[in-house]
Length: 322
Image 1 (spheres, rainbow, N blue to C red):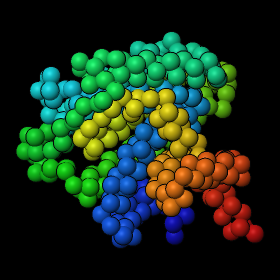
Image 2 (cartoon, rainbow, N blue to C red; image 1 turned 180 degrees about the horizontal axis):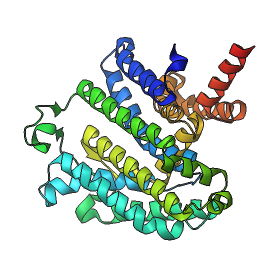
Image 3 (cartoon, rainbow, N blue to C red; image 1 turned 135 degrees about the vertical axis):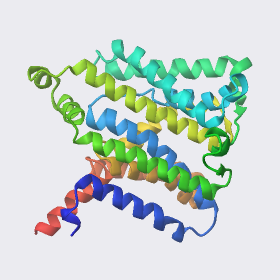
Image 4 (cartoon, rainbow, N blue to C red; image 1 turned 60 degrees about the vertical axis):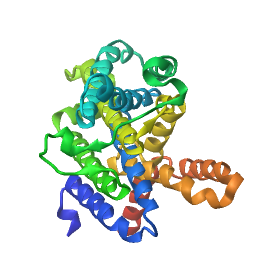
């Protein structure tokens, strides 16, 4: 029965069911917060799935765009008088424009040269956020207004996102929307070109694809995803520091993407779930928590080289055929 459903519809259906039934397994309201953080990280990771998994481009500075989105929600209400919801949109627009402007020269690079260039971009954004203390609060961070859709959309909705429970459902809807866009992109003409660029840029050029343009499209889309995730994290925590734009956060996002399966939207979400929830589960090991986390990550990458979800899917398929 499920095999007759189109793959993208099936993926969205599975994701929707998981979002709906997960709260039934929560032992306390604290887990709504963990679920919300999983969804927020998943949004950033879906953007990296488009960039890394679809287009085959690497970025080690994507947390910088998350920082732009986060600080847009912190600064725009104070200095521009914008409501938080419009500040989120402003951050996404700024991130997209910056990605377009910077991506044109750096996406001509390949391999580790591209990785270093994107790393430099992320570090530059992080340095600005740390050093411009009169605007950003410096390393100490700053408070962020709560997201009330009543204010943001002029009374169209009467929802004030203050509790973890409400945030869980709001973030769940957002991750479904992000997954829907990415899954539809996969089999679209643009998605097919991106995947051809991933396989071979020379072959893509041979059939007439504007490789530079499509790489830039993937970079801009992924930057917008990262910005929205950063804005949501700032609005959820109601406090933000420059750590959100740090190199370590960029590596964390890339690790989530690769660990779950870079070419799969559901795989990316699985990776985000694992690396967000697992540290909470490993607290029972106290000082060995990080050792256990590192060991699990190593074992997954050694024995599941394609990523967590694609490897499990292949294993189940082989058993079904056998």
